[in-house]
Image (spheres, rainbow, N blue to C red):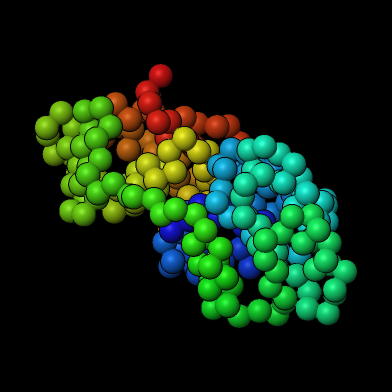
Length: 226
């Protein structure tokens, strides 16, 4: 499992990527422009950035170069998906810092295998099954939650949202990214995240201090309460 940022201006492809990458249990964020990509990459510090073709506000090579020059993203792996019959595009991508290049049209299976190969360069992370956050204790395997020793009943979506925030603690997650991960088949409004978090904060009052709202973007679970 890796932290992946997908930059793709096509909303339909982003949905297809979400399904494929979530099935592989990756921690994924999606943006549709180079400007948002740079902000998201600096905030989330992904292991791998996938760039699909050119963007309305920049070329693929320009985005690769910007990511390589920024100290917070310089070590991220870069996978470019670009045209098959455009050698110049491919060369520019590699010269700008791309680690791999997959020509389009491509098979999703091949892209997933390339992703696996790239992520093997990164040491595996250990994912906690028993989580303690102040007075809140969570058993990921049984999906049981207690606060101050007392059971707290969470719905499936509330629990999944809490785990999504925990697995990306210290990083800002866009509402759209959370929806793609927690509601992959329902496609509700991004505002469903706000209402679900409101219920979570009510059921787990101590968590309210740790969940930071980033206006116009999304939410972050801070590593420590302020």
